[in-house]
Length: 382
Image (cartoon, rainbow, N blue to C red; front, side, top):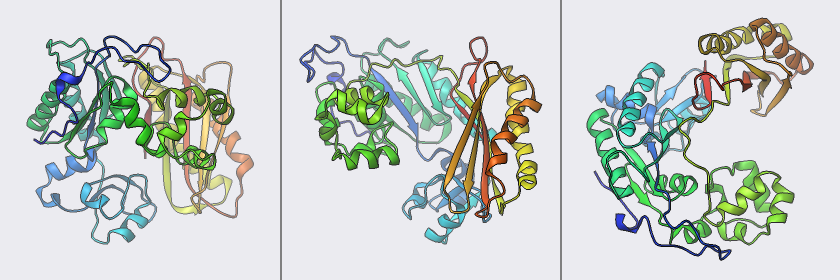
């Protein structure tokens, strides 16, 4: 299994550093891994069906209103990406093979992988079924080299699941996540404390976690195109233009991220959405289509015992423009009837619409998860 490490394992950790502000970095930097499965859903399908191997595969609905949930690397070469409408994906890749998702299988494989992680550290922060942060500074196998741990974990995943994973190794979460993208698929990359700030300076800002298309466009309008450009901006300017995210951008431009790996990361929301076979324009039609969405969200609430205070309605129109509307209560929503009532109150002012609606979604947030199951944010696709 190829491993493309930028530096030998002995380079992490390193001696005391001087950061760009002249203050001392941690004398013993943390050792953080970001493990990211390669094209996870599609790779599972190719593993289980030999006829799909080496061919462009999309996991998702093939129908006109379908959406790609995941794409194999063979499909990605044609520009097929997750969240792309299936009709657009087919246009880009006429030979694309659509496979219905099997989330029960993906969850079972994810549990296998999580069990491997747990043999090395209890400090595991899952981000989704196919990726997680691990803090291996003090690990269960007393292995000094974080790179060696990443190599072992990748080898174990391949041997036990038949799948490949890419890994990033660094001294914080921001850089570990960047590193895992460097040599995908089936790669490993290390960003040491000495190289971290320089590595960030050379990157386009669109590569930074937390910088989406809208934020990237705003940064470009300000002349911020690289990490070096971002680093040159005063703290006050970043706060002025990006609000609460300003201090975060100021720090990561210098390779600084003090967020711990949190194994008890609290679930923030639960949501479900569906894309329709035809555009909807009337309130009654949308109300009918909302019912299974509400059922799925409330079923999770009943199963988990969790309730929330904020309802968000997502509406995507026929031209792919989308909006959200939100309402919060001072107390938890204790019944499906109230969840439905709030959702319909948010929907009613938006109807009827000449443009037509192709997708509706409902998300419940501000969850009371203090005494119940803790897990990453959950999105339920219908």
